[in-house]
Image (cartoon, rainbow, N blue to C red; front, side, top):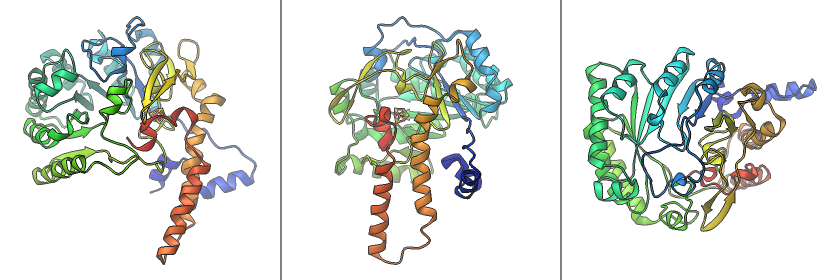
Length: 389
Ligand code: SF4
């Protein structure tokens, strides 16, 4: 329990009170997860991907020297995720990078479009082994998938995933855990049950269903299924049906809520514990804070166009990660989330029991007030992920 508390909220409130009494400042909590953009090159031109619209900058690969420098920090991390705005398997040294992460005793994961998941790549993944492989899909058949993930072949992709799962079984390995990531849009949600059945047949460990949470065109924003209003009944029905099917098959399916909420304490990427390193070695809180290396871009939020500049806190070329993580402005960014979580936690630990409907209503009102008094950082306020997408 103590560990869970520390992971989510940082410091224990009693310890915090004692520390404040002694006039000491809060200890700096280190990160646990790094996401590294190993390349901005990609062999697809997906209709929903920012790089399709913002690839004016020259594509490049993460330098090996910089990766070696960053690797000095890996022993302090739990997980290194090799993924940014590009296809990781296009990096010529992707498996050397993964091996270096393993040597430093951190877990290694990557997300791929699956097109290059051929025999040699599968053999490398199993040899390491990598801990986690996620393969992205956008439809449950070729007509939807191939139209969104332009350059991809649905059948070839499923064949590659099946080969990975088979090879893992033959080698009698528990890892990598293999996930299929099925992006939910107005087009693809109707086939969610069909996708559950396919994913189960292939034998992947889980089907995850991310949203189109960073739309960069109005058309993509209009194709999202979530919102602040009452959820569409047809969408909810499709999700319920898929969940029932997954339960019957004893298969793991993860779906995000359709209704966005401003009561989310911290976005799923948890910038308090995780950082993103772009292809140049610049450090940002997440991939949405540095698109295509470091482009300005426009994302959409509730139908509104939001010009977005990169939010970078330092460069690995000239600083090390401890220095960057400890910078005042980066700490201030994380503190907004930490204060929000801490304020919520203080409210809940002081509330021992709720005896009536009125007490419950008061409590919910207090939560609203506490969260309104501790908003998420300005940069995140027009990001769907801050509201649970
Ligand atoms: S809310 Fe959005 S912008 Fe903010 S850290 Fe999370 S993903 Fe990044």
